Image 1 (tube, rainbow, N blue to C red):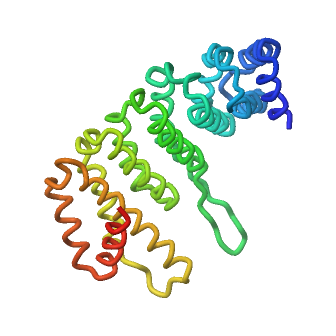
Image 2: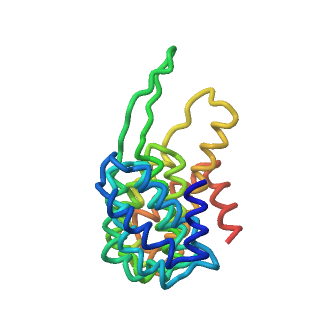
Image 3: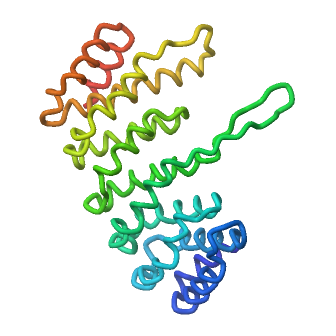
Length: 274
């Protein structure tokens, strides 16, 4: 509630709201757990301030104080900063566009390498949790939004290895989102995909070759099929690129898929939708 109210104040009276917010941020911006709630609140407030009524000039000038939160050591504050960035890119890309190459890109690239696994004891059984997953997912969302809003500012050659890594993530949600991003890059800057074809094709081929477990529940089967369709959709997007159809490995993957009845049906359905 505090963050939402502060965000409204930024919109209504930026000259009164932003300087104290920046001062508080600089006082609490230690990057550790000390003061993380204040940093989370300020990042979330700026997220709420993004929209058609955003005071663009004032927020653009304040961005240098907020963007270091993308590298905050506290996971909650870092995630709030990523959500702020995604909102800014979506609603008012101009407030952050000029800082994407030098400040935003290095921070985003670093987020893709955050894996923090821990075991949660639930009594009868134990469950693995990856605290880095929510951060990686938001970072992918930022890239997807950036491809629509500021594609010329993104360092796609540097991003492609991270996208390939995301396509191989153990979390299916991450893979699905990564597939969408790669397909989008095919449309925006196809040369970047061609330059990293081997790295991207590997995880996609793995999805198609993975054997289905016996006695899976109905929702698990549908989830598996959704991942297969997503991988095929991405492969077809790559093959649609000029020179994409000349990639030998891609040809082999699609040929093998066409010989498996269930994959051939999915591939035909995806091709028909284009």
